[in-house]
Length: 77
Image 1 (cartoon, rainbow, N blue to C red):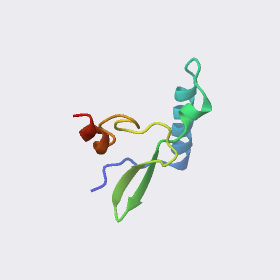
Image 2 (cartoon, rainbow, N blue to C red):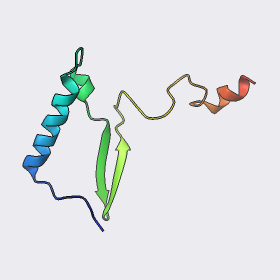
Image 3 (cartoon, rainbow, N blue to C red):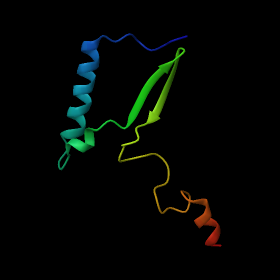
Image 4 (cartoon, rainbow, N blue to C red):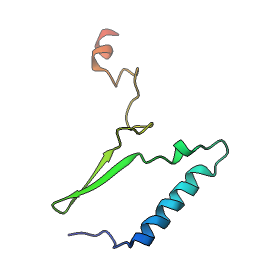
């Protein structure tokens, strides 16, 4: 069952504009701050959300963190 409210194309543009405005109005904000970080797609009625490959910020531990590379975590003990 799909609980997502229906949006018109005008709503999508307004939502995108609002997101951009929010992310670029802070002091020292750049256009990169408003770059999309996720990709949303629908397949057979299921919504899939993926992290965009070009996203500068990603969830989870960052490179160089022991949690990010299990091999390094074992070598520290």
